[in-house]
Image 1 (tube, rainbow, N blue to C red):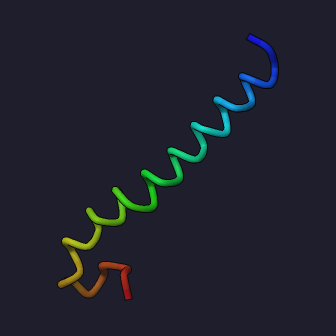
Image 2 (tube, rainbow, N blue to C red):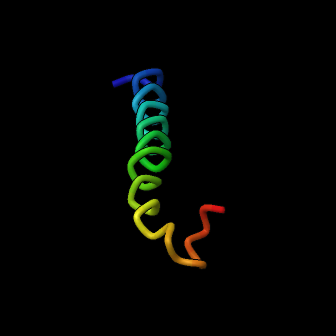
Length: 41
């Protein structure tokens, strides 16, 4: 494995972590939007 492949895998991991955090974890927090402390307003 050369350095270019390692950098590509790191960039892929960062991109996947960002997408998972943005879409998957955001959906879970919408269930509590009836509360005053939900943090989505």
